[in-house]
Image (cartoon, rainbow, N blue to C red; front, side, top):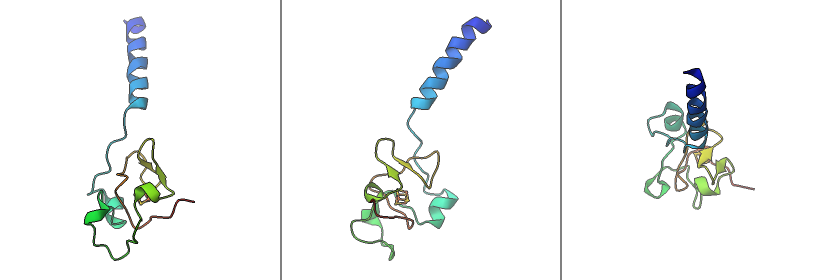
Length: 88
Ligand code: SF4
């Protein structure tokens, strides 16, 4: 049984690694404290600067949607939070 289960477990693990990151929930405590929105065009946050969104942020990884500030989640390229910092 173990010989059969091991390759299966390996398959599951590699699929898990390749799986897309779950979307950052808007009610995530850190997301709330940083005023994260997944669509900045709908935001009226006074701290938001024109042109600032996750796609232009240095913490964003476009290929995975990952944000360095929200480990284990993906954020929207059209999103924004108050920790935004212009990509160099
Ligand atoms: Fe988006 Fe940048 Fe905030 Fe992460 S730190 S949620 S990439 S604006």
